[in-house]
Image (cartoon, rainbow, N blue to C red; front, side, top):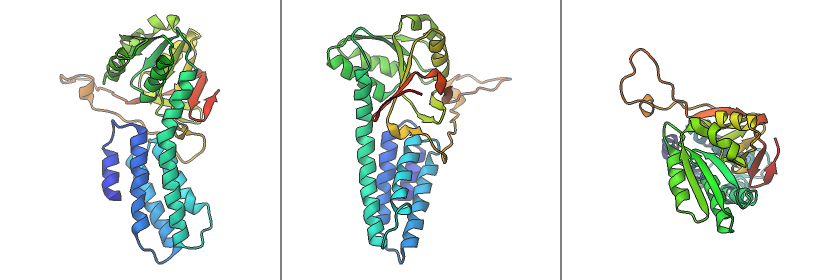
Length: 284
């Protein structure tokens, strides 16, 4: 089961971080059904399988964080025997699943509280957490105008705009990524999701960095929203960018030149005004 989950996670490039993290955590239940002659062998097997799950998507911050929490339940505590270690592992798995499933919702609720009636917001790409925050704010009676960048080359912003169009009290506008500087002077804030934050760098869908830099030039605050499991403030995790197929950028042959298609970019945290997670609002 764990090997199958590793292969599945490796191919889950379009799924949300919460789905991946929960699936990986649940997969570790398999070790609870195995017999081990010693506590040391149980710990080694748990660590080996957990590391394999993390390697399936090495730049997945929530996967890294939650698997680390499960491992710590047995490596950071002196358990009497295998049974006690298994019980701690099971408790850790249940706690991680609960944390992931509730963290995203709480982050959205906290972000909704930051939105005022009449706000004009610019968002980028497709963030289910940002969408939920906007929907919650609208449901509470606030009227919002939202500019959505297309997030080329995959155009996930179009999905965001279509979703917002079905929500009462939200007036959405779709624009190409390079037009952000035209509308940002009208905006009260930029609100985007996050892939992860690692120390002083914010990683998100490519196109985020130029939006944040333009917003800083125009004194428009940038708010990043996501679960606290995506914030890494200690060693052991290194983000690795993904380079997607050239066919997403151009279908015809590229004669005499290369096509670069990075999935994410790196935004310095000094361009971010606030980070809203399930644990509250942080100021970088």
